[in-house]
Length: 225
Image: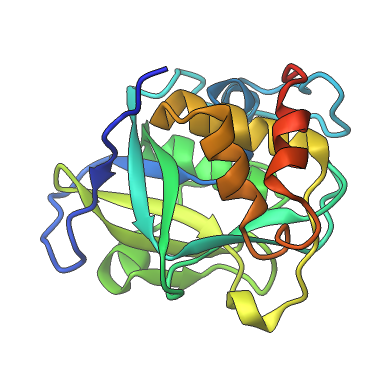
């Protein structure tokens, strides 16, 4: 597998032209495009506990690319879908986060975001605040904070996280099934080896001290469902 040179974001402050498209930056299980498909078309992934309604616009993303986001990913809270910790993004922490950016319509991003917030897809989100200021809180809980860390090709890059920072919440180690989906997306998008991927995931706050790179590598030898 050949490494992929990830794209760097254009900084905030670069004028974004009016558009009905955005880059959705996935840093968790949605880095795996098979996982993202359930948010777009609906259904339940194998072994899952949740059925997704999908988006009104069920087209696949126009394209995707590997990106590096400023900040870090950490694991916290308890996922009702996977068991174990969920991935969250702290854009203010020192470091970089490998992610996958999907070019989607604003309507599709709104539908994905609604499902991440455990709501039914409905009206299109107003993204003017997050694009103008880099952050917008839609609610108090997990994945209810929008972050725009920059632009690609003049279009805003937007992702979802929690309102708290990495040091403000107790870490929770992720489950093996969740790690497999994260690893699958990372390796496919960035061209990383299993060893690189295992080392990265084992070193994230919440996983560090609970998972070793060797243990994560052993988990990755099992196929993703």
